[in-house]
Amino acid sequence: MSSNLPTAHSGLARRRLGVVHLVFFTVAASAPLTVLGGGVTTTFAVTGNKGTPISFIVLAAVLAFFAVGYAAMSRYVSNAGAFYSYLANGLGRAAGVSGSFIALVAYNTINFGLYGLFGAVFGDFMKSKFSVDAPWWVWGLAALVLVGLLGVLRVDLNASVLAVLLIAEIIAVCIFDAISFGHPAGGSVSFAGLSLGNLFGSGVGGVLALGIAAFAGFESAAIYSEEVRDPRRTVARATYIAVAFTGLFYALSAWALSVLYGPDQVQGVTGEQGPGAIFGALAQYASPTLADVANVLFITSVFAALLSFHNGVARYLFALGRERVLPEFLGRTSVRSAAPIAGSLTQTFLAFVVVLLFVITNRDPVADLFTWMSGTSAVGLVLLMTLTSASVVGFFRRRPAEEGAWQTLIAPTLATLLLGAVLVILIWNFNALLAPTNPSYLRWLLPGIVLLGAVVGLIWGAALRSARPAVYEGIGRSATQTNVDDQDEYVPVGV
Image (cartoon, rainbow, N blue to C red; front, top):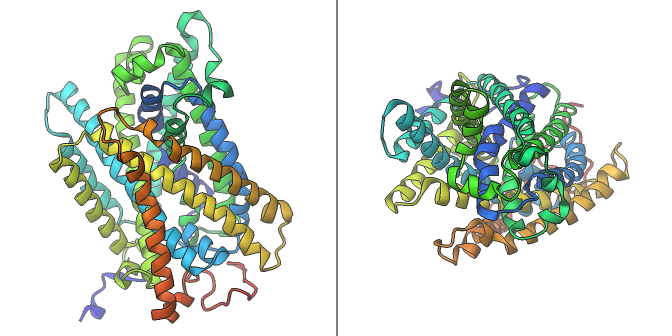
């Protein structure tokens, strides 16, 4: 009966996206004003680490090594599952399933956390400007409905929405940076924020966790690889641009915040004012109107990140459903928009359940929902990128390629080691993200959710190998070349 309904099919839109589109998706996922107003202020307030600005440069450098091998492999593997398909083709199909479960945990948790942040900041804005007082979850659920609707529309329409929001918030951050350097605390610019010695001190785990969350969405370029105009070049170019931009821009903005209030006072100011430390400065040194505009852009920044992560999760679910790793209905797309409609609706439902749980348990939307989920997501992202770097080495070891040893062996090996070190530091110092009033077991429980997802995925991959061998053979192959043995030479996509 359902076969006659013109509601869905199983293919994504082809050749709709270029380099600029992918850069917007990738950078918008990290959301500049969200990073500055939410992430950076929280990092200073929670950790008090004076070296927070330089952390973005350090993480960008590590990710640059990662991007070399990642971009090289993107020329041969094009799949909406991105990291999932990379692991499947480089480390084995069971490892690919494990990676997909890690990715689902990482991207879903950051998405859940952002609903808490959005509800809190939008609620504060409505109360202060329009005297409309409603619980944070009212606004969070309203955003959830709107994101769900946009998630089933055309992908290039989503890119256009993100582009407008991103350009506006970048301008707002640039104005704040200029004001900060023009009005330094004590009358002179302090370089304490750019000292590596200050970074590797107290609270470094929390700094790295919230810092890597700023690069969340790094995989976005590859997630949309089936929908780009030139898979062999577009993904690589967008990835390099996004890493360079986010690393430098966020380091500059975090440094500007430290300069404005002083490295010794910034923790107290951000702890008391939160995002208000940004908007208060704009109101004082520029104009109240500009501060209000920036506040609105902060809200739209969080919304842009919500939309980007929602789209990413929907495409992961699509890839897994298409290959029957997860229920096949998830591999359905809309006839009208070619968007992964089943994956989009599923992600919306999961977000609703999590937000509802935090509401029922009376948890704080920022200190609990946003911070806990951001830290959990950071662990998942770093673990996923570590495994992906190793998979690049495995992928090129078994087949000839036009790329040299730097791209296929040296850079990805260095990335594996560096990301592994970041992961150890992050997990060992995870308690830096938790408030003193939080239960102590969360230090291990939250990272444990990611590890549990990895183990369950590995077990499920092994189960598919014995119970459903035809499905197992197609893991990570849908958009490249199906039913190819691990030892066979791969045919680059688009060639």
